Image 1 (cartoon, rainbow, N blue to C red):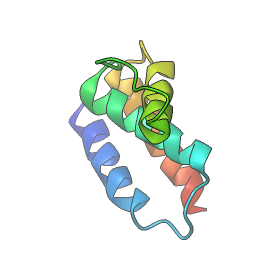
Image 2: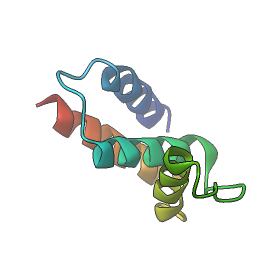
Image 3: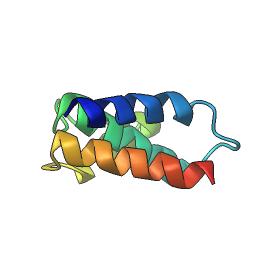
Length: 85
């Protein structure tokens, strides 16, 4: 577990220094996987339609509901590795 956590933390740091900014869908996927890995399933109520950014983030996070923290970390690390190329 410690090894995966270290890889995840490295990927989080690397995500801030990518050669170019990922598109919005990829950013939402990264956000969702990060939240799932660190906080579990989406919680709270879905933001209202006037908060479009908050709503999109919550929806993306809710889409990965049920994914284990380990799986979310693995997917996040893989996604960041793909973006570095």
